[in-house]
Image (cartoon, rainbow, N blue to C red):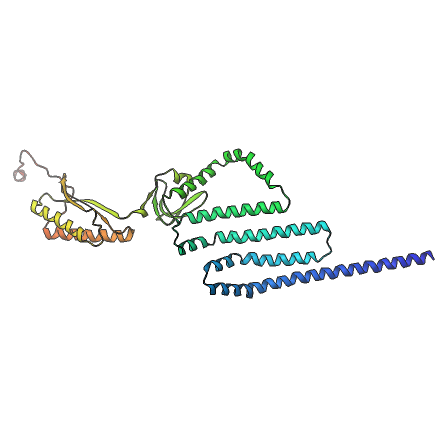
Amino acid sequence: MLDELMFINDFDMFRITDFLLSFIWKEILIALAIFLIFVLIRKLFARYIFNFLLKAAKKTGAEINISILRCFEKPLRAFIVVFGFYLSLTYLPLNTYQDIILTKFFRASIIVFITWGFYNLSGSGLFEEYSEKIDINVDKILIPFASKVIRFIIVALGISIIAQELGYDVSGFIAGLGLGGLAFALAAKDALANIFGGIIIITDKPFSIGDWIYTPSVEGTVEDITFRSTRVRTFAKSLVTVPNSTLANEAVTNWTKMGKRRITFRLGVTYSTTREKMQNCVDRIREMLENHPEVHKEMIFVRFDGFNDSSLDIIIYFFTITTNWGEFLAVKEDTNFKIMEILESEGVSVAFPSRSLYLETPVDFNSDNKNQ
């Protein structure tokens, strides 16, 4: 009788275990089905829903809406998958502790996706486009620097919020940073000097992106400025990276800020030039420059400057209207040709370095030839 009862109990336990296993497998399959449905929704979102939202944003004519959608596209795709994974796990028979951990990680993932979207948005060039549309005068060099600062702040805020969400004490970490700040500053003094140098460049604005600059370290066109350095493209097409602290302490010549470009030289003519011809040359060259369409009229000097060792010197000093290097060379070439034409029409020759030798006692070369 006892054996029969034990057999019945074992049979009941087997039936209960089999029922529980079959129930768990059903829940696992349902959870897997939920996850696969959200994976399918992600594909539908990428192919149809997002394109529909883009078309709707384009109809409004607001570029800012399109930029925001593109920046949050990948975070939204990832969120759909994570949300499906979260729902599938919540369908399983988890205990209270597991539910709390799952909820915390899901909320942390939401913060990650929001941070991801705003990180993309801060580097999308949206602020630059928007400032141009509403006619805000923002220096080009400020936009990439500000974008990097905003990105750093977004990431730092995201990490601190996630840490708080997972139960970490962020205030203690911040206090630790305060205690170790001195040691960090001493170890990274060069990096900090470059950061402050970048801030000085931003606030002082000695140059902007796209400007042609000259310093004792480098000459070329500014391409980018980061926390640590400034990138300059030289005229040999090489890229030079200069630390911001170096640029902040050097004299910077910004050739792009020229309102006009100078041409100056001394023109030496031969001593056989008469006073009348010299006067005509000076007057005609001055008149030519004053009537030239590419020469700035504010400051033109053409003067008989003095008597050199082997020439009579005319100083020519004027500015071109253009500051573009190629156009400047074209104007310089044209004025040089016109000056040559004036000299040729006046019968005046350009002097070259020479020396005349005068002998106090004349030498009769013919007598020497006869003796030979």
